Image 1 (tube, one colour):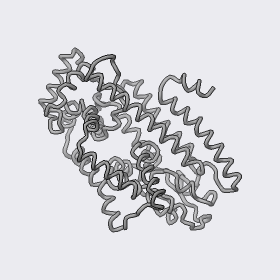
Image 2 (cartoon, helix red, strand yellow):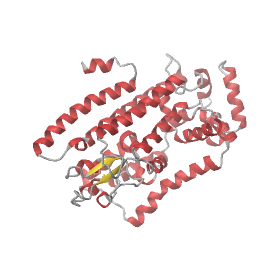
Image 3 (spheres, one colour):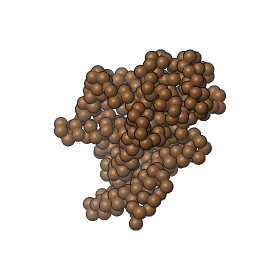
Image 4 (tube, helix red, strand yellow):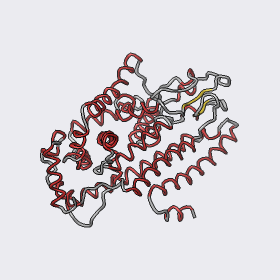
Length: 395
């Protein structure tokens, strides 16, 4: 009966939400019985790791499905055959373009129609960070999921993960903020509305998603080596890329500092067992804090799931009232934001871009032209883009 209903839901995202509901119910019933038999304090937080894993896999499957469709779309542009529609969700992998679109929208009121889904998803992820800390990193991001599997694999092989000393950890953690500052300064200080329009509607940005795919399809030995090195480092050091180098995570971390939801500790019932600190993937000293306000917290709820004392550690919206936000609630909020933004964008015409297929076909065959490099965005490019749209009859 459940599978019949899921199969007949109209679009992919509600199906994902329904399957999450089904899977989480099975998981929660099993966990509840286990902890009842063991006579351990449990509740919803004991189920948090499994609930989070279900959500992570839902987003991973959506990502793989989007990627597969996009590869087929590019193959269609190159080889012809039966027409394949372009999946707008691929624009989630263009955060710099989305950040430019955000500033351009604020300055001009023009919601950029070259990569509109990118801006929609970017806003959704910022909202997640503001509401529930850096939850995108531990609940949504496929790179975060891969990193987590890598360090857990390393933990099983070596019996532990390695922690860098504070004198090295702090400078390395600043790298992602320096990268964020570099991009933010270039966009918010170095570019006015005219510069943003020139880039957003220029030749390079119009095919940025295709360029990204071709980069990985024909990756150089150096780039592959760098990615492999980051993966190896993630085996030994928890979330190496996320902790030290990801500027997207740094941006979300900044917004998460204003989040009303924070891990909250009740000092009256806390026994200082330090299990929360030992379990924290971000190496936060949870047992020493009343409210975890750091930008490194991803609301993964790992610390709450291992706390042996009931009503001691929770994700709470208030320091005083200590009303816990359950793991299921976090999951539903994240999925709800994602579905809401996607559906509203579809209904308002801000999901699919305005580039016609004929223009894509024209550009794919000259994709190696210098004007499609990063430095090729110029007034000449913007004029040529207009010419291509006019010649395709879809201006």
